[in-house]
Length: 393
Image (cartoon, rainbow, N blue to C red):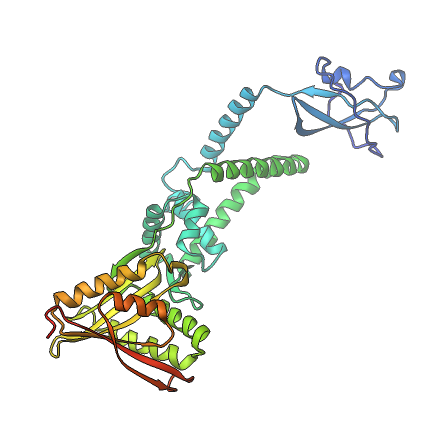
């Protein structure tokens, strides 16, 4: 029987001392180099399969309690390993059925099947995270989800925690399909494992995990960093802007003036009513947004019948202060009121906002009224600024 043939497990396994690499000595011969070669009657050898420089290290051997030298065997050349892995990868893809138009005994393409499985394992996942897991770009993810949604497999729901967020869930039909896919895949893997001894099953699991992790790390390193959308100014209502603007006002005025829920509620209510009228003559809303989130806003609520316009909901997130966004919004607003020939544009603000006052005055606004009040829940001095129209009438 060859020295390296599979043998029953001995009563004990003794760790061996490590020797310097003996790459020139064949493993079968080197493994027999023991302190008492004349007493050989049992040898057990295990390969660790962990590469150390250019050698695969043999970790354990026993000889009736006697220690034997640890011998290193030369590894395959890297190019040969790469070719073998590529060959195994192609074969694996073919045997699992990924070359076919549909997968897992279903009517769906491989990417759709994987989308169903991932949504089923993480109910409420969003499209962006799903695309990242599947290694699909935004457009392909959207198309795949649209098909699944149209077929009644997937449904979208508004997040209970954030009204701007959309979550993905499997429908009842989708859950049934997922169960069929799981059954097919489980049987496929189970049938293959029956052809392997337990030790090989564990070795396979570890090797595939190492390979998958290495590929994932390489893909992550190669993937270009997705550029975030630079702040851009848009006109008109955008989904989520009412909540964002109300939140900006609430946080700013709570910090500086101590305003509470009444103020935030009033901002949200009046802004929602205004947005519901858009588009309308003499009215406009500008938003500075980044990645779908509103960071600054300004509105003109004008009445063409009276020729008077009210500048409202002007606020800029602290992160954009000094960026010039506020001046850009004011420029757009003043151009709008002048084009609509409003004879007056006015706004209300609070005393103490010196930077804002300087900006208003640079566009021709002047203080016309000032009074103290407590109707916001805390005492403040309100100021009214006015700007005449282009003709001055």
